[in-house]
Length: 176
Image (cartoon, rainbow, N blue to C red; front, side, top):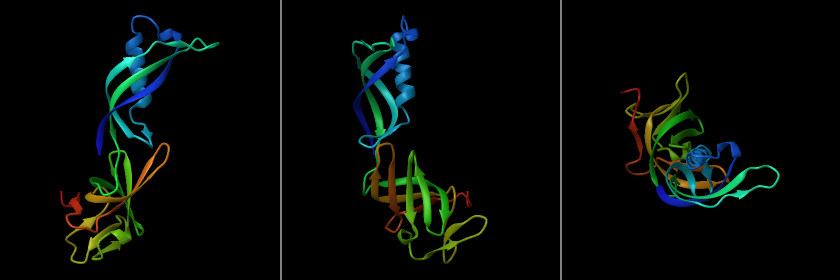
């Protein structure tokens, strides 16, 4: 799920960036350092939407660097247990398949795939129904439900299922 939140960060800036463009240099360094990162507490930072406040700088002894407290608004993505997501399959093997929904990688075990789907090995491994009407392979788009998450300091791992009503393949690249 996406959230719009306010975060704070202390930014260190080298004296060569001081001058007329101090604010622009600070904002561009903040965007470069923060966007695309993951904190276990808030989730993945998708984009910075605004700067609320830049505090007074504090000169670091011996280095000349200045530390500025910056308060900024950003959009974050954090998946939750029970959430339904649409994802793209990245890898299929006999244990299940991996899919990505934005920056989150989700594993769906073969026990959480409907019983009528069998693993087919070969040059393009996939899970296929007995009548061949539905196929899950690399680059397939699937709708899945998150049944578990594990949060580390810099990553979020998810376990998903497609063994429920209205879940499964929503777009097959083989038929497109």
